Image (tube, helix red, strand yellow):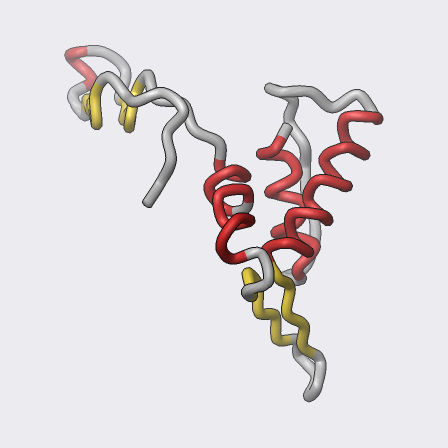
Length: 113
């Protein structure tokens, strides 16, 4: 179940007719949530030692599992590093990484801010 800090006003609002204004698609307008909370924090009480990420590399034996607790710790650390470098809510952060666990950690750290 997805957690909302503030419930939305409308589920969807779409306009595909340019005569009625700019084309737009809006979902859950007015709602507030946090992806980092929904992916991590809400699982810490009951699932902290369960696997959150299973990663398989390209080479045999190159694999890694990360629990919710470990993921939360890494995400929090990186979010704090970003904040210490002046990154704040609303800033754009470019992430250029291969498909490794650090990609998910980086994305969630940005969302956490």
